[in-house]
Amino acid sequence: MLKKGGGGREGREEPERSSPNALCDTSATEGAGTMSRKVVRSSKFRHVYGQPVKADQCYDDIRVSQMTWDGNFCSVNPQFLAIVVEASGGGAFLVLPLSKTGRLDKAHPVVSGHTAPVLDVEWCPHNDHVIASSSEDCSVMVWSVPEGGLTRSLNEPLVTLEGHSKRVGIVTWHPTAQNLLLSAGCDNVIKVWDVSVGQAAISLDELHPDVIYSAAWNQDGSLLCTACRDKHVRLFDPRAGGTTANELPRAHEGSRPVRATTVKDGKLFTTGFSRMSERQVALWDLRNPEEPLTLQELDTSSGVLLPYYDPDTNVVYLTGKGDSSIRYFELTGEAPYVHYLSMFTSKESQRGGGWMPKRGLDVSKCEIARFYKLHERKCEPIAMTVPRKSDLFQEDLYPDTAGPDPALTSEQWLAGKDASPILISLKDGYTPQKSREFKINQTLLQGPKRSQLPHEGTQQRGPALDQLSEDLKRLQ
Image (spheres, rainbow, N blue to C red):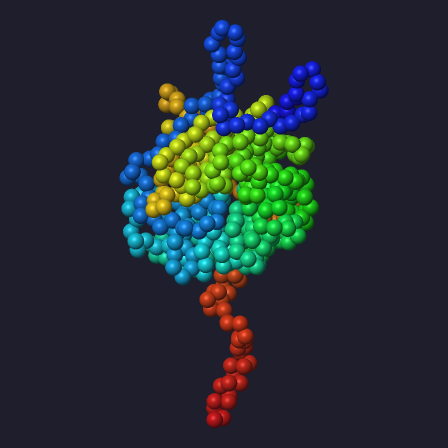
């Protein structure tokens, strides 16, 4: 919010900065000899509360990854939960059916094709049985999970995507186009892969001068928002060859990592640190990239705040590694724009976590979000619920939401076409679909596996060489 200095002088316009004690969404007036009176802003999300599941509904005895990378290490959809775990001799992650709660068998199968630790995983939004992973081994892999989950360890991916020269810390699927996967590596390169042919359709090598901290599509996938170590936040169309449409030159002044995501009306929501290492959140209108609409200081903890934005409710949830809380804010079009709602706190800190897509929530209980919190040795689901007395479907809480069907083919999007997500109603609940065929160019599947490729310095023998060898043997 822009405010002007008073005192009869023309004041300098500056963004409103709020302290942690000023985060309550109230306005107070105080008169002489009277008590202060608070006027509370009306919001249907004011009383949202977090509720952990009972102990027997957690996922126990899981060796969650100890990597220091600021990632989620977890991804979830209406059928499966994926968690990056500790593994000897390479990288691995678990895939569990949501119903498989309780203590995990130590011999439970894992997905283990990477030769170095896994840094990120994400389920495909258009196929609940397909998941992508990235690793310190510089590769990205796409996997197909069978109906019902794994009965044995999975070692061979559907396709391996190789092209980064350093570790790959980010993978994220396109929200509306089929078979398009984005990866960002510590080589400062962003690639958009057409998974169906196993090739990078777009490679942006010069746009970022340093490590990319975050990359997030906008809702229809027409633009990409990135945060970089150079403190710049960029919003651009990857199809434009690396031309930056908008840029925030210094979203936050501190040296710690920044995170950024797009929200409604083309605005950007960022988290970062001040020069004094205070954690901050800010909302930006890109028509004025020099000053945020609002900037709020939260606390002095050191964990990077990871934002999760729900476009259906316009609520942002913040989690951080090492934190034991989840803060949530409502975004509106009026000042102060970012309204603090509440905070869920628990005793144990989190090592990461994933958010359930809206179609996987329990609408009968007015659940508007569900966070799968990673502890050191378990995963604990936490439901965010709006208290309502009626058992009827609450239409104001559940507008039509993004469904599992893609709106575009990869070819259409690469040719310049954009489309909003195909929406579905949750009025009658959502039934997860059975495994869909994930179409890959068959020549990729028929080619040699990575483990079967010849070692460097060796040559493959052709038919003519084999025949010559046989002739020589007969002569001898």
